[in-house]
Structures are given as structure tokens and as C-alpha cells.
Length: 308
Image (tube, rainbow, N blue to C red; front, side, top):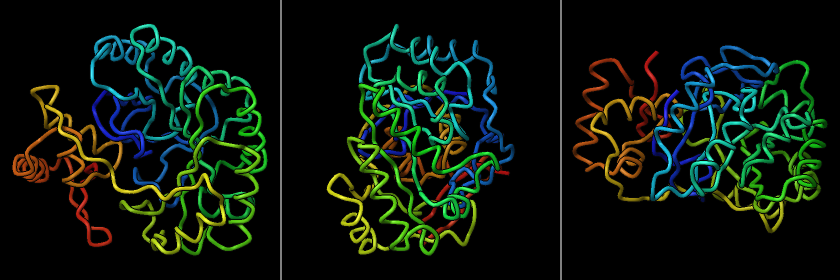
């Protein structure tokens, strides 16, 4: 578990102080999404527990906050963050230390549970995923735990909207030939209207996915989908750039921790860590040689990901 500066998956949020609730590399999750940039799920579970010691996360929060210049404190994981049973307590701890808004990035598969909704309701912003409405499409794209059902997930999101006073940014990941047929898109539009989020972010495969057959939609296809989903839908663009001085001397460890969460480009490292491009290039070359990270090419773009 670590805390770093970096862009959260919703690129409209700018930069965040990310708190990982799950052990990097282990990836306990409720699903095994074909597009996941972290890789395939090692442990598929729906049982909430303490995958990372709560005392360790509390110490990391206390050591990092308060800190000026942060747009949002985001809770995420190398899997599903709501699997940590103390999520609500962590959010309260952040709020006790600073006034920075708190976001939770979740696949929403457990949101039909009242205890999960209570924890999420303590945040200021929740970014739940909804990639499919039909059970068949849900199983194709998300490969969920056998007990999970798309209809219960949607009902949980509808109920959460009634209970939650904060912002909801619904995230829809689109994979060509998997969940982009007209019937599924119409069903997604109807479900989104019932959930009534503040925004709907349309994403497609950009970073190296867990499965090589997970292919992206074209920009034209995304525009077509946005018209079907409705006026709140926007296609999420490239991450914003920023200049921010490195927060610690050990930049190599920061890079390794970033890569454990998600595949990153050289530009991601430059913008997230405030590095000169030439220095970032030298650092990643060294880390590749030391077999701490590895380089992969996807869609003509070079990414760096966890070495395994």
C-alpha cells in the first residue's frame, strides 16, 4: 500500500493523492474484466475483509495529509476498493485531517449492499462503473464472481443515487464487439437515466488490457455511443498535463508504485511527477534494465507496467 501523486481514472478530475486499499500485484477483485490494465484477477471474491492492514493505511493517511495543492483524495485499489471493510473509516480519517474532497473509484458490483452504500456515502464523489445491463454482456466483459448479477448492481446504483448527496460520475468502458451492440447501448442509456448521475464518462481500451482481444472503439464510434447514451455522456480524453515538483527524493519508488496501479506512458510520468522528460526517460530505462518494470507496446503507444 502506498500513497502517490497521479491522475485518477476519471481524467476530468486532474491530480489526486491516491490511496491504494489493496495489495499491489495481488488484485483481489469481484470481477475479472477483459480490459483491465492491472491484468487478470488473481483472487475473485465478494467477501469484504482487510486485504491491507487498516493501521498501515491510517499511518499512510496521517503521514500524507494535510497537503496543499491536491484536487482530490482518491481511494482505489489493484482490484475493488469496497472489498476493504474499513473503507468508510478511512474516508472519515481523511476528512478529519483536511478539507480536500474525497473520491472513491469502484466497479459498483457490491453497491446493492447497504453497508457498502453507507461507506461510499461518506465520500464527496463516487465514480462507479457500469459496462453492461444484460447478464450475458456483463459476463462477457466483466467476467464477474458467479454470485453477481447486473440487475442487482443497477438497482443498487439507483438506490445509492437516492441516498447520496454528493456527485456521481458514471464510468462506462466500451469494448468493440463486446458491449457496443445497439440493444446493449439502448439498455445502458435507460439504466443511466434511472441512475441519474451527474456525468457519464465513456471510456474505451487505451492501455494494455488483460486480454489481447479487447479492442477499442474509434472516436467516431464513441461519438455515436454518446448520442445514444444521452446529453450527460462525454468521451474521456487524454490526461491533463501539469507541472508538479517531485514530492520525495525516491522518484524511482514513486514510478514503481504508479506502474503497479496501472500501465503508464512516459507522458503520464512527466505530468504526474513533475519530471523533465529526459530524466523520466532515463529513470524508466534504468527500471526496465533492473527488471522492476517492463515496457510494452499497445496500439503503437509505449507503456510501462508492473514486472511479473
